[in-house]
Length: 402
Image (cartoon, rainbow, N blue to C red; front, top):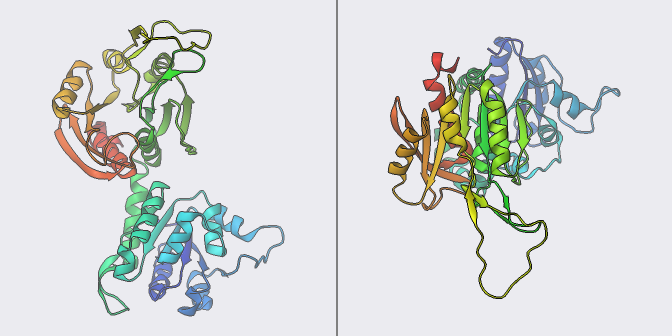
């Protein structure tokens, strides 16, 4: 799987830099084309000449070292890479990545690349558990960076615990596993709805809900990362997501979402409706701003079209997944929705639980399938939960989604 791949290895300043030499050698033996970027601190542990001999390529150490006047080195190498490995990744380089700092060749290249990035941390056990480091790693996971967890054992500082750079063979195995997962939904079209809808009262005011679209966008990215062509129909949200395999369709009202979902539904293989769509809208919408009047105001409401139910009634071979956001008796209401709307599966969560629901970066849910039953999804980041949900869906597709 590594044969012919262009792999950029970033080596930062930790004693575990010596393991990066073995990693370079192993990758070259597997047929990969390897280039190495070293930080100034990394050069205090291993010389560039070592990596040059092992990779058979020049080693990059300075942003301003431009050997080819026709190219900008950090842009050129960022575009060249099929993927990037940072090993060892110190707390310092992780902090730079999480905060968009570009003050050396490695951090500048990492900002300039569109290639997948794999991080293999290595540091003292207490550093690894420090809230700032944990926060930075969580941010990088949200940004789509892939982590290769460090091992536990005797550390150079004398402590015993988690923080030891994973062995080169395990790093390669983890990357190969991830690369194989990238093809699980190749050739599939995944249709996802996300975010809230808005229903106007007048040109100034509207009804909406607390949905931020975070879960739906996480699902879209997870599906695209697994090789799917994704159509993301989204209400008004403050999320930017640029991915070559994601087509974004912006809508505002429930009626517009109904139309967009039905337009793309016939070509979809998997449909996930995670949007929080208005059940009611004002029956009459004023063309002028409604002025404040004495006393109370009554606005007559009418039902919107039930998007999920209509898709369930029309589905043929599509695998249809709904979401149920409840505040009580969540499992019972969710299972009822699964049956009534002719779904294949449903993701149920109690939005009243701490750490779950709208606006949070985390979620807690239960995935219920007609075929396989219940699977609890404990609290996790929405990015992590999206991957778990996609894995469950893939396991139910013909040929395991392949």
